[in-house]
Image 1 (cartoon, rainbow, N blue to C red):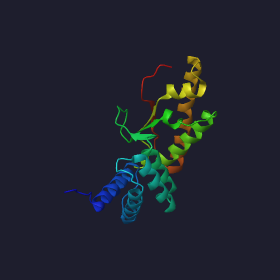
Image 2 (image 1 turned 180 degrees about the vertical axis):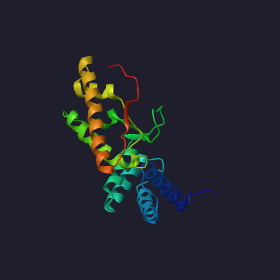
Image 3 (image 1 turned 135 degrees about the horizontal axis):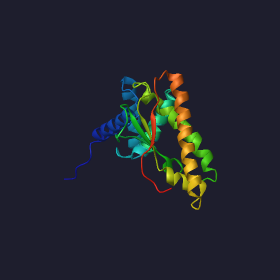
Image 4 (image 1 turned 120 degrees about the vertical axis):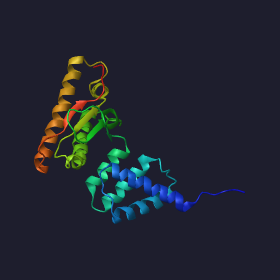
Length: 202
């Protein structure tokens, strides 16, 4: 006898994967979100997207959230689903949510203007993630992963150590300024600590 997969169960698994993706991005579950997940699951099933396919699921889910008038939630889902940001539990100086950004992944595109792509991309990601620090009034951590690789991509593999260190300082200052502006507008009492999460040879 040949057993066929239960389409209802497969669709339910997709819907649960979509809800888990939304939860990781700080999108609160409610009736509307469950309807959205069910609708996206039907479309994902038509496209043969597996529940583990976070990239395709995040794009479909983000499109649906955007159509519901939730652009920042849509962006967070894209950021999480693409692996640009992830929750991290590395050693922290104070409590609060910890999020790490993957800088080389942000720069994985064919362009001669990588630096111009990096900073607007960072700004958009921080704007989308800001809500995740609201509950702690800005207390938490922001990790920057792959700063050395990002520096070599932008400055060139032959760039000197001093230039790469200056670029790393510029990254920190940019993120700190952006978080300061976001915190002021959101009423935070603190702002996340910024750390480079991996030892790198600069």
